[in-house]
Length: 383
Image (cartoon, rainbow, N blue to C red; front, side, top):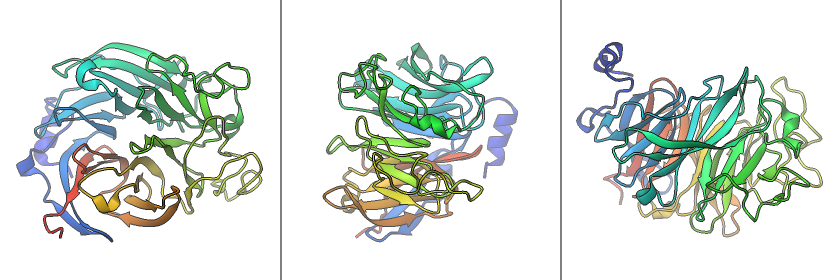
């Protein structure tokens, strides 16, 4: 709940997001999990549909809000909206989506944004690069690196998170934009994982770099709505999580030139209950490494590689919107999922983003017009 003080500030137009200072933050909550005890603290509240969070080198947080604002959270205070962010299309599921930092951000101040943009009466997904000023107040030299090739008036399935590889190249997903057959069209950016260089050019290892069998930016196809993407820092493995229809949420490990099936194969059904495609498997289409039926509505994915929770090393962390939880998935040496634990169910509302912080703590963003930034750390009672 927003405090009365926060509401007064907003009504006065002094700030548009309230961040409680540490002394006023919600009391920490303690939880016992299967392998360890954790504490969850509220770092910030009153955020307006926050979508993505990253940790800056000085320990502050940079957060996107769906309506088009980018803010820095530092010392219990939210900055004014950062100037210079390009205009976004706030329509349906679209708006300002992901923020990702260049590997050399500490020296070059470069970051990347994914967003919904407008072309006439239609919308699509774009990727933007910019430089954050040293005072954190403005984004300069903002440049659109990529814009999907076919726009539509539909308001769903924009994707779109960004995973920055060690070489600085960008992987990102775009959903089928509510038109499922586009996911099988090799001349359409929809329903795909894409791969570009940080200047927007085509990487040499892209499977269709010559443009003959498919668009040069394509990495893989057959994805319904991949809203989560990450790269395992231990081995460089690309992982995505995507929304199914009525069931059939999936975790995939997209490989170049492969097809992940939507809508030919799926573990879900149409919202009407009607069967989609030919079934759950068919020649020429890849299987997910894990799926959920019924759906949990996954919003983001990360791999735990940190010192704070060594018992979770290599586990996958998936934020869930509909089921209002964080799910932790254990894997064997081959990468196959062998166990799942669902954490915090119903405690904090819809979880939009999950991110492993440099100190090994886990950050979560809650969804909605009173969104919060939460930090999961080791409990003081951890043995």
